[in-house]
Image 1 (cartoon, rainbow, N blue to C red):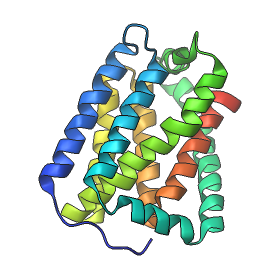
Image 2: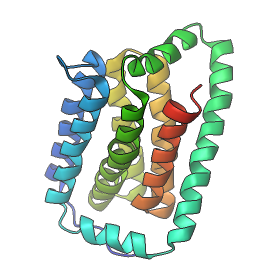
Image 3: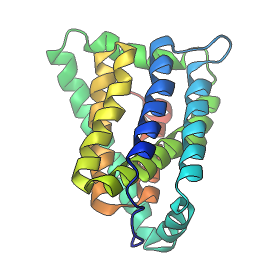
Image 4: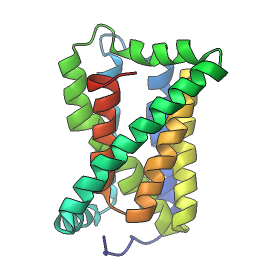
Length: 217
């Protein structure tokens, strides 16, 4: 993607990061809000953040359009392949964690307990249409991109990984926090290397569907 980054705006990225923390920390702490289950709450938070990104970053739509016009087959292939690679990393990591950490089995079970009572088709639709794409549109396509405009791409990569991981601490589930750190590093590096929101969206969405719907651990 060749279009230039937006100019520095420390207040903007700071406010966006604070809002993300304010939305996600209660979500991971409480898991549901009255009749609203985890998946609907997560999707709603992501929609809020994505809309905010488009409102605040006037060049975002143009960057996405250019991204979709350039090397599309390559981005699709790399996105799918990277999702498969990350799934393999988690398969190996799960086996190792079960041997090393006494809390691993319960932690993994608690993650999958989030699906309990929720029709799997609704989980799949929310993951495929809202959650997977939306997380990348906000965290990498907007937040990491804009932080890079205020500092440097490497610093933006690190700060985005730290915040992405930190909001998961509210869950109290170390396996979820470790998973978030690994995913944050992986997708943050993917964006750092290729600067393609579309590639990240494909990678994240395919991985989500593999892990939670088609080939759960």
